[in-house]
Length: 188
Image (cartoon, rainbow, N blue to C red):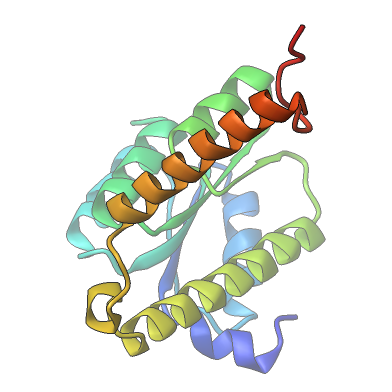
């Protein structure tokens, strides 16, 4: 079970999409047991319609790949379109390297082949909670920091130009001395 501190951070809703009633209800129960609000859909078309009406409230979607109406990749695309930071977990009974690559390229957070243990879903949920916590902390710190220009820090372009000049000077010195830096080409 998630530590209490993480339960408070995961305030968004979860959608579970699977055409197998038993699997869908098991996953729904898993999330409800962790105090999360869960909506379920039995086909891809219903899931996409709900996602489009949701105004981005779903922070996590767990979807099967092979669904009637629209496949899990269409659900993944809709979830990420409506909420770019949505964590989508793709599950499938027909796991393949090709479908895993498609899921990751489509923006899936994780990919689970069926059958899977609820402990695997627990690990994914813990990783999501940790990542969401870090993202929240990063946003908080970024908002608290004055901008670089406010602190008199040179813009990135100036820093890159200075770095390029230093690298050029080092290359000239290496050539003059006949020394080769680690990882550089061997000079003959």
